[in-house]
Length: 60
Figure 1 (cartoon, helix red, strand yellow):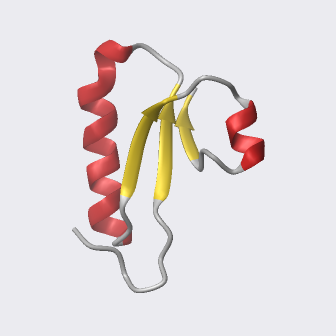
Figure 2 (cartoon, rainbow, N blue to C red):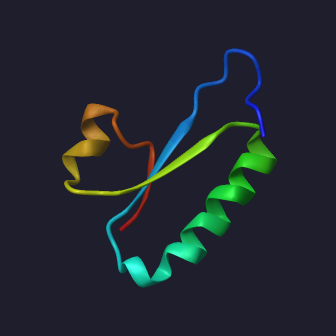
Figure 3 (cartoon, rainbow, N blue to C red):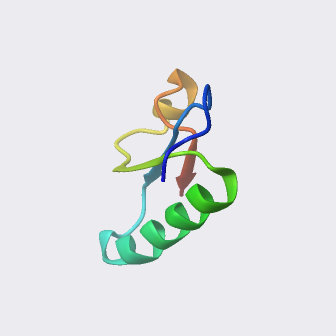
């Protein structure tokens, strides 16, 4: 799905079990469809990623 013009992508990080990646991807896909914004998923390495703006949303 393409983003709306000018809409920034959301970066979603998981700080939890990688066994739940299918659930996280499902939620990310839902947000893409509802918000019309691209969602990038990654494994979080530090909560400081929120403060730096590297991560917008997270499973913690």
